Length: 287
Image (cartoon, rainbow, N blue to C red):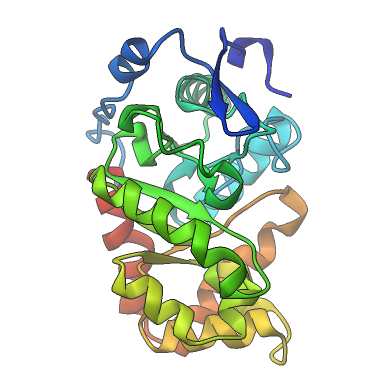
């Protein structure tokens, strides 16, 4: 559960037969919190930007406490990262992971990193599971939806399904609805999704809808005969990915997440990895 600093007043919004408690007093207050923060770049050179992390302590299945968050952040800095998005899971059963509370937790963790002299700039975000959030996400105002920087431009999502037919009927209308609100959607780790692994046409379908793809770096360190590895390599060498993220969760698994970047460079080029870890992520960061 989040620290006391991260707990804010909750208002329940009906999500069909579920309720999602958003940490907002009302829609107007939420919308006032949405404009992206202007980063002071005078003292920070822009290096790699991690677009997918579970750095926030105690809010999901990621870092357990602030010590682990700091340890993971140090490893990122040592690997050349200057920025990282905190993208906790956004699920109906994790009601504290919403626009206001994620912003507060990012602010609190940034203060901890600054005190520990870890030169990593944190940015807000979230990883929405659209299958579990549908259909209740549909009535929400755009600025109540968790997006990169809470800026209402790009949004990270995932889904889990064995077959595309198990997800498409629910997922496609939600994707179209969010795009109709002006959001550019980024699918997290498609190489890990069984429905993608077993059907090459799924990626074509999503690409036709304008969905961007995010690679999990560590999947490139998986056994070469694994579905994760084979799918990641195929999509990477076909130049289908928009960005690479570590999807870091725990300090003890950080090595493979950094090693995956080296594998990506060998499979493609240093320029490709720079584009996927710096150039394109800067668009998400508004830099």
